[in-house]
Image (cartoon, rainbow, N blue to C red; front, side, top):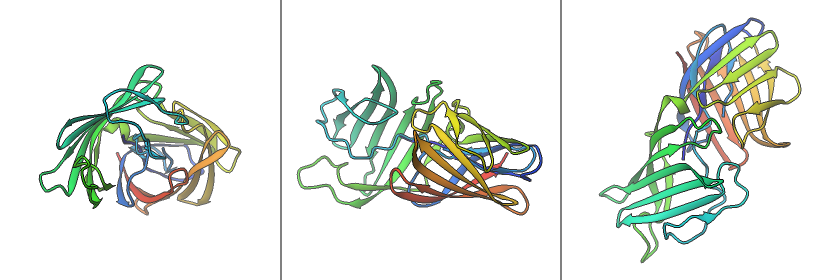
Length: 261
């Protein structure tokens, strides 16, 4: 489904607290959905991890409304798809018998766009991330298939609740602390060893490197495997943070912009 973001900081050598609001995707679809940024005393921002549950590799099972087992995904272990009518389908995901994400996907009248209204509770805290994604068709539905079949690309019209966008960074000396409304957090030493991430079953460690007075490079891990990198840069006026995202796990790149709150 969807959600995550981040923002900017001030000086790496000063204590700092930052809150930011959701980054706006400028390129490449989604993300996915974690977080990083910094460098500046006091502030807040929006999250990056796109709070969405990435469906990759592709899931294959009958669209019969029943739950089917899914192996290897840290966020859910069962999934279902139900056909509501000729232009609507519903998807749901469960973990340990509990529904953790749901989405209703609806085809537009022209057949060239679709929207997906979702609720994401995959965070162990149970805090919901809600929103609507808007997708553009890139390949037609095969003959005889449901009208929503085919290939789709997420657009920048996606809307996500602040629970999936806001994140806070607080720097004290060489230690950078990160937190989100859904309960994801870490405290990592800049230029130090990987630190533990709590509150996200698919993002377990993080390492930070300072690459300049207003830039930071973050590497995220699931276990010992790198799953993404985030190169964050704060604007000269300290109001925005631009992040180049490389989603190693899903083979996607994007650019996100977070705004200081």
